[in-house]
Image 1: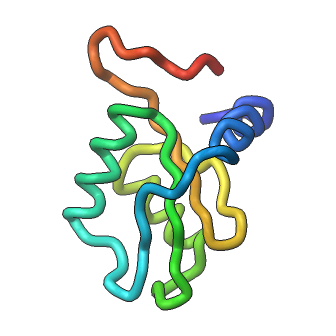
Image 2 (image 1 turned 45 degrees about the vertical axis):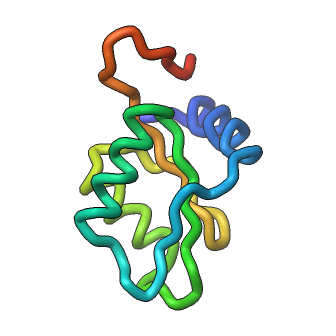
Length: 97
């Protein structure tokens, strides 16, 4: 679990990121989960855009993704979701919390 200071630091880091993925009317599928998992493994912090056509709110979709990916919920602001998961790759540069 992230505490409020860690979450604030990750939110600040994510503010400069562009969304890498979009969730639309197709919703969340296995391919999307695999792609987001690979991005989390490589970068640890991922920003996702939720389109108006998506089924559910950004917070609902963030909770669903976090549980499917084993990731931490950082923020759901407007139509953007930020997720964090520490990389398990050997020798990876980790985000210092």
